[in-house]
Length: 128
Image (tube, rainbow, N blue to C red; front, side):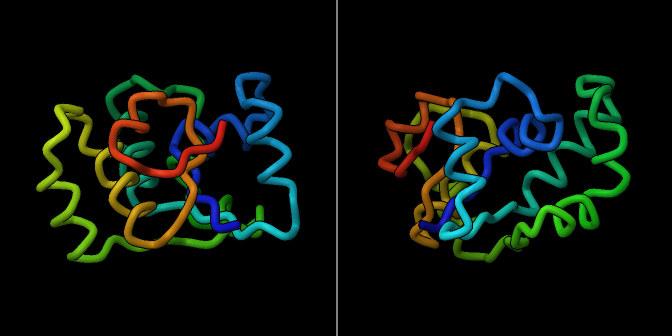
């Protein structure tokens, strides 16, 4: 399975947090799955940390690439097609980070690892 981690799933995985569901934890640990992390999450973490909304992610905000690579996760860049789809979505969800992750999951045939039930309205495969 191709899994794309939502930003909170990535943070909770790296923090070994109990907030991460058992199903998500098991899927991330499963060596048969490819685990992807989007450039969107790097932007979201850096911005929220800078604004003081994510103080616990100081290390990740500074060392995103190396921390993600150390986990064996794959990096996903943002394509123009993904950006266009995210901007064109008619669903009223306004969070631009979420919209990009949804577009990436849809266009790359990925399952989004997220606790956001609102994502289901976009038709994206979601695991939690």
